[in-house]
Image (cartoon, rainbow, N blue to C red; front, side, top):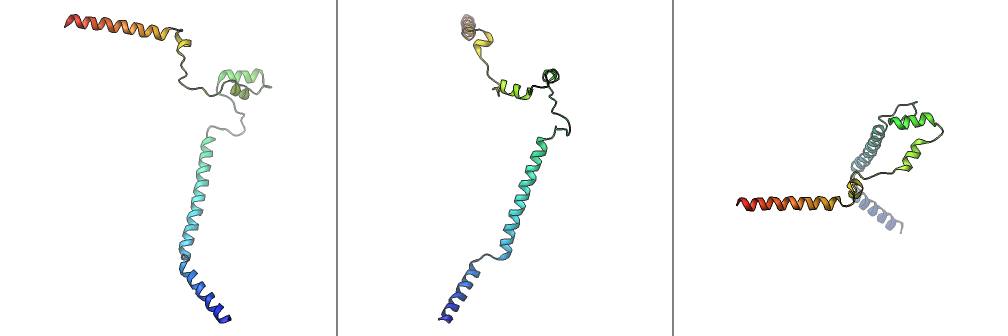
Length: 129
């Protein structure tokens, strides 16, 4: 019985050794994973450094907006960055409101003027031909 178990164990071990990838290939995969991790850490550090590019150590965040700087000087007890941030959120760059910019009927008026000009031009073309 022990001889049979030993022969089975020996044959299983040989099959596993044939099926297992070579040690060099496994080490290459492990080193590639380690290099990829180091590269991702290096890229994260670069991104962080670019995010901090305008920052000066030891200096309070002095806003470049003169009105905000003046407000901080006059009322240092108020957190103006928080106040300004909650006052106005991100706005779309093209939030053009026709009625607010030029009056309620301005679009219709422009369409009517354009139609009348086109009609006059068409009448002049018809007379010339």
